[in-house]
Length: 147
Ligand code: FEO
Image (cartoon, rainbow, N blue to C red; front, side, top):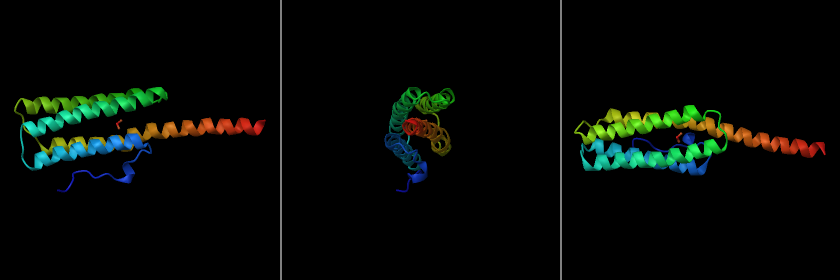
């Protein structure tokens, strides 16, 4: 079956562990999409939404720990986006549990949100981390050259 999202090198933020976690999120969203395309309701959809919620929390916690430990300047805004996404996934699950519709719009929203977040917010913290690393190396070599 065709996928809703396929991994693309343009989505890489240059950190293998985080890229792998993003790939897992893509897989879960593809799985959710299959349920919707096959017009499945109930158990399968709810289990997949539950898996998405749990894995998203694992991934966001890993990123937030990394950003905090490196003093990322955009931490608060980034965390706010994470919280918003988790709330959205949770609310969708609650709505479907209560018998609400499972829509393609919802899956498309999750996909678009994730891609945009990776390309803009996740790449921003990776860039800041890289430039700090280069700054530290630069000062190290500058000190060496002065000696
Ligand atoms: Fe990879 Fe900020 O989520």
